[in-house]
Length: 267
Image (cartoon, rainbow, N blue to C red):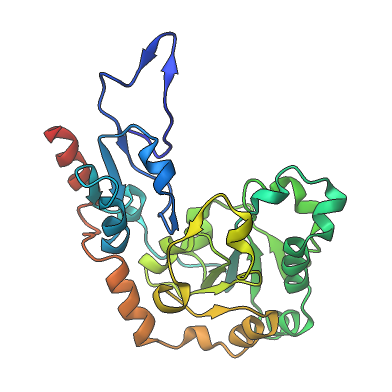
């Protein structure tokens, strides 16, 4: 069993005579059909009925709607200070870019402009809040390019610590914010490149963030900043609560690991 999936071959040995349980490390928000059918697995763990329905179309027997194992022990934790967390994903077309090319990209400019937004900085100072930016592992080597400050800092904590202690989390497209949503932390999406994002990725979008997202979607920096400085994210929202319930349908937070083990023993 593993949260990563590989076609393992080592010194002549393969998984052909073994059982493999894929625990996943994220949630399939994009159409990864070609990737899924190219892999070997006996169980493919899903988180919620929406993902399970999609996976059953390509893996009807192997799909198990149990939820990711890490969710079972996930709980909100007290924080030393009020913190917002931004978790942007990466862009495939920038993976091999030079530092100069990277700093000229729309991706860099969108993130860096947000980190230095004057209205946002004034809000953080006035309310004694902090914004932590958890860069994608593939972008960590570029961290020095961004203009961090006293109130806007690079997050070096684990994903679990960052998410469970946050007052609010937001991303562009990453499924990592679903961990926060699972325990009731408000989420939002800032998709400055929504029109071009999937044209430059090796997969297609599957989720309509506008109708299925677990928080509001913003396409312009000023819209996101307004949402934050108005503290609108602190207000309860029945629409997003209903979407969360639908998204995670079928997952018993107290029996995630037990459900997986029971399926493993039945193989």
